[in-house]
Length: 327
Image (cartoon, rainbow, N blue to C red; front, side, top):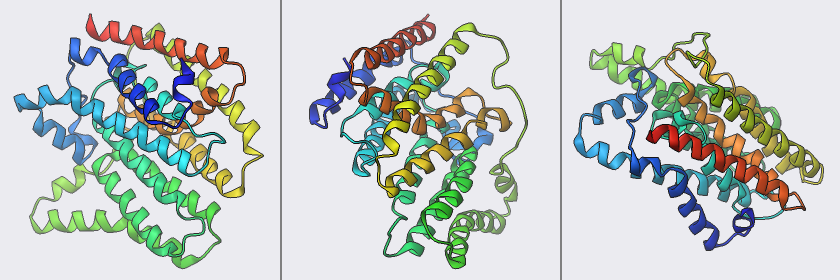
């Protein structure tokens, strides 16, 4: 089955669309409410405000599918365009679609799902830093996007250290560039604070500040949850193994892009454990770096049995998730 996604063709995109509908069939059989917490940023507030509209509940399943499809295709296109794989295909998009359906908390519209669009967008800007003819312009736009994403969804604050790391490893140290990046990050936050202050609604600004608390993102022990999480990280380890074999053959720019992706993954791991109002739904931010690395496990093995095993294990977990959501 995986061979259907190893070609860079319109056919692979069609198969992605079909796969997306199949792995999220629960949305049509038994639609579930969106994961909404008002204290997670402006997007959460907007979703909660719209939830009272009857039309919203009808549109939500289709909106969710469109969002994750666009994200999967955009991320896959970016990785191919940056030559981060030796062969062009849609294996990263395949991994992205399957991952969104493995955990029930990831299988519905939420602020975290929308937050993934900002994660991909920021990585696009960071990938342009190397050899950019106008680095300060790119850095300011990157900072501006990071600041806006933070206001929209609090856990994306982790993009700040990711952006700082990317600047440190991709470009030679120039103090003015660091100031430009920090200015871009601060600008939208300052403008929002000024707006609500002039409107005498500073309480809205304090609601946009993240609240940190060490906690477990689940309240009860679920064997299937640990099986699914263990399976995801097993796929990641396989992907990392094949990535390490290919990494030494890549040019320095591509290796640096992979380094930024690795840092993004490591920094994102504590998100569900450190943000007060976030549960496992916030862990969907992991999917961008996870699918990028797992895409290696689908693409590079010379024998087809290993990618197919990973694929059918993922499908089995997806079937269980759909069963849980529909029963």
